[in-house]
Length: 241
Image (tube, rainbow, N blue to C red; front, top):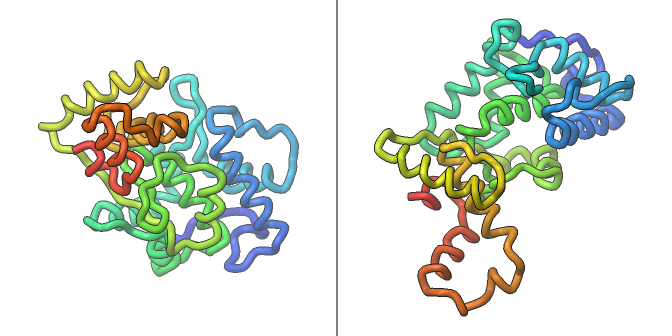
């Protein structure tokens, strides 16, 4: 069940400093350029080579409904199915958060035995493909949006990075639908009616307020309490419910 990756530079346990840089540049590109054909690559830089061999050749980045995005469910990616199924079982089988280190251990153990060099790329693909169900934590703090700064921590210390699978009961779906519509109007973009997307929208709404607005006591006690809860958010479920 080992993933077949035809790139001798990255598909190994230990990679060179040049490949580490190329992998980092590719992962930045996966964040900033998702939605563009070939992630915007036109030439053959080192990170472009990793994109072509690790991602494109495995059909992990596809055009769907006129938009390019990461896809791990298509049959054309079936040779990597054991990787994704092992991750699904790990996250959905735990009520607690699961660290990136624990995910790597599962992926490196038999019968998968993936090489360590490709794991950061596969982990980011899995997260981006499941971001509506996976909440991200760094040192137990809920992170609403993955940025390059957080991605640096992702690549440096896998024990500090954790994920948690979040699902919602039927009785709370109407609340989420109303909340997502309201957030969408305020933020000027669509917000999916899921716990994670709604929590991300709320946290971003408050976090991006001017500094004075985040400190003032000239608003109601209720508004101050809501502001305090959201600014200290470390669990999307608790933020919402």
